[in-house]
Image (cartoon, rainbow, N blue to C red; front, side, top):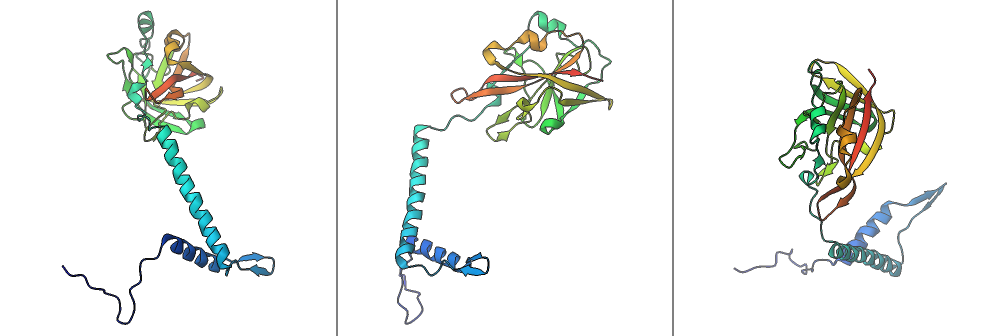
Length: 255
């Protein structure tokens, strides 16, 4: 196929402008339209001597190239870690004698349906969680909701009701992303199936290494109605694709 020059008659064909020319033209147009006003005096930054324009363009181009090169070097030295996989961060579940005493003691207490924590902006429905085949606490399939552990007491019954949620995932923060920010005295509300509201106050916030999770302290019997909010925390291990610790919030019912 034959290609013809489509330039207007009498006008010579011009090559595409170089990037330095494009940058210099853009800079000139911006400076022409943005004078500096100090009191009653207007200072125009354009026109500038050609030598200063070229120096400015060269400096800007150098900074861009240096930044790109530095980014490449960092990425080369630190290869991308595997995405955070919530399923790779198991939470220990009650076992043995603890599981026996952690069973619901008051069937008359309605099932929990929603959780609200005003201090950290949490408002979510509650899904039901059990125990995995590996003997760990199930976690919600979605990072956007929290779940109540059905093997323990219902919120408001005697004993520690357990609610778990994700801290984050490779797509962003999870429902319990700010759980570690809670402080003693903060309020936690659990709405139940009959419309009643159970109010709890935070008594402590603790962080435990997954290898030293205090199962008895978290799931063991208590003399009153309490709540445990659990998520991951601490240091993120890129090799495992999960966190090395758990954050546990302890709360007691006040109504």
